[in-house]
Length: 262
Ligand code: MG
Ligand code: MG
Image (tube, rainbow, N blue to C red):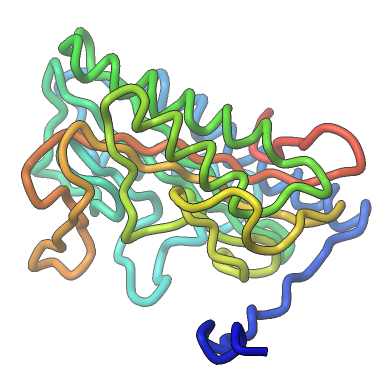
């Protein structure tokens, strides 16, 4: 049993599996998240402020008798996260922050509906963007889809991590390592942590009813990050562009299902 001396005895936190009724309720929360993204796709354009995007999102969420999960979460002051260009996640919408042609903006949306959470992020182009930015967006979104393809019962968490990492690195980019995906359900952040890099064949096995928020964050530069003085905004330490794509999904006995779609 020498191995147990070498490996820290850190017990993984318990993972909760959801039944069909609970999944149906999570899908309702996820559908509201998707409606917000549908609106963001229309509203993101040069001249719009990130505060205006936040207001649009709040209107949609409240009109569905739901609440914005992020608002007040550990004191977060807004309802969505808006992260521009070298910002990775947790950017705070602001009336002074105006979108400009060529920007990329990552918008993260969390909705709580009847006690269930949906969580999805997407990176949008503001008008025409550079070839480099376009390639980054395609790679980060492609990494999410490649990762979702791995979410079959019997596969392991590390299989997902390894696929996302290799998909990104084969295209010359890096995955952000200091922030992760997560379990999602009654709370926005539940066990397990879902790393976007790692080794296949490691970690917990996927079982039907496991609900996760998968969210590769990808940069054209180095994966090291730094936080702004606002205590929230996380950006690349070298100023390189970053993109973020996220869906909440459920593992089933067949193909994985995405919960944050219309
Ligand atoms: Mg999110
Ligand atoms: Mg998330």
